Amino acid sequence: MKMLDLVIVGGGMVGLALASALRNSGLRIAVVDKKLPSDITADAATRVSALNLASERFLSRIGAWPLLSRKQYFSAMSVWERDSFAHFDVDASQFEQQHLGHIVENNVVQQALLATLQDSAVELLIPAQIQSVSENEQGIALVLDNQQMLFTRLLVAADGANSQLRQQFRIPLTSWDYQQTALVATIRTAEPHQQVARQVFTPEGPLAFLPLWQDNLCSIVWSLPSLLAEDLASCQEAEFNHRLAATFDMKLGLCELVSARELCPLTARYARQQVQSRLILLGDAAHTIHPLAGQGVNLGFMDAAALSDTLQQMLAQGIPVDDARMLRRYERWRKAEAVQWLATMEGFKRLFSGDDPIKKLIRGTGMRLAEYSMPLMKPLLSKALGTSGELPESTR
Image (tube, rainbow, N blue to C red; front, side, top):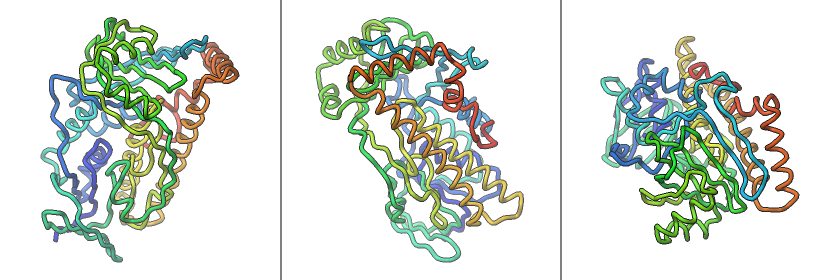
């Protein structure tokens, strides 16, 4: 049986980031996942993330940022509503920043994080899956599907929104269906994106065009009622291209689909416990939010940074890494942050849903006031950008 201090189940971006942040801590660490991240190819991967400035600082501090093989900054955002005077633009200079964030393919981030773990003491048990879990007063025993046995003082569930570990430990989950499905794809546009992230609100849901590393390449996230999303995912490419460009008000001219179309049902989730004894939920295993503000992975990276900072603080003070009091303090911090973002995204979704004339008037007036009264919007936008709020030390 292998004796460990920390086992991270899930080799996605958040799980690997935690392992990377702790790779020089002296802790005995293993990462378990059923598969390696997909290889980076000449074509853009379908799944991308919008990384804010706090996530950039965190990835820089742990050595992953310079290893990203391709990334695209965006220096401005443009948001509007179809058939309305509602419009809101913001650029980096208003925040005294060079850019507002980056769009990066998920597998590019994973590969960079894996590279930081080369020649480290972190063990990558990939591919492998957990077959059984049992807990006693000293720790948690794991049996993998290859019959390897592990014993760990702490177990981190970074295994995604449908976390098997969360279910096995019977952690209560509050969830609600957004009654939307996100259609994601890669698009080539007639006009260059000019390093601007754009989003249009329609009665059916928001459509975002996120700039990729080529001037005419964008990733789209189109949130729609599920039946409509399925229809758009299966229609002929020419029809899809036409409907996409029309919905986007032809802002970047004609659109050409250059990838598969993937569907992701949208559900809000909130684990009522993020720490249960020796188990810690991280990232999507602890919470999922609507993608309209692109904050999901940033919230996960802040979880990883906060947990890394907490564990290293405990080590420096001679406190056992499974000390319940310190882990509860971490949990209160991260639960409060998740609740704030869940409430904010729910409010935005409700406000921008439908085409009720009164709501359209409120939206239009609010967006125009926000553009001309930037000091009123700066606190919320600064938090989204990762330049304010209760940030972990390693992200400042």
